Image (cartoon, rainbow, N blue to C red; front, side, top):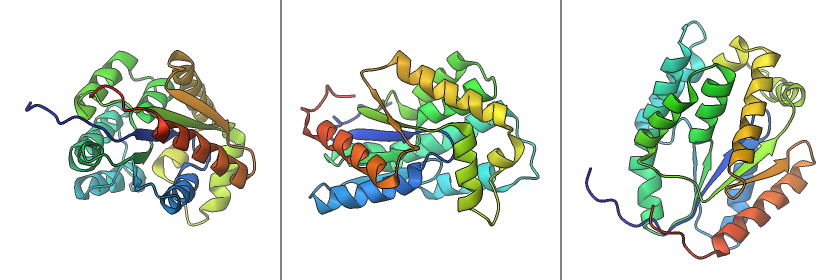
Length: 222
């Protein structure tokens, strides 16, 4: 692999169970940060590139397909590798902050804790797909499975994704427990917000955390 340029921009990820409001909050927070003068690049997983969007359609939209958990993990990592190479690393190298809705931690939570794929295997896959890139800050929007799934069913009356259709409440409880375990294992990187609070309160809390991260000196090259 050729030498990678120094990544001087901040890389911030939003994580959380289904229905925690990640996409809605990311859009709101990006608008606020841009209004404050921060040239934030907003991306999501899976997707964000032509290749990633095709993989997204396969992963989320084809409910008739029986996809094995390890296949899910491989597909998510394929989309991630393209997003990192095509969008995230170039933006960070140019000094642009990147706000990403879901990243490698989601694969650990969903395919690892939720579906039982070996965590060490998933970490090795993530190291390959990201080239060792880790976020400067990961914000966990925490919400109970009951509240999260109720929100999703109200917010998307046209239908649910394959993951929501095929997984029961116990699966989503395992995913949430996985996120909490990941956050507890790396407290220096993770910050948790109670996403059951009012939407405006959650947005303000995210903005405060992101602005604090943007004000810190750049980390060592990664």
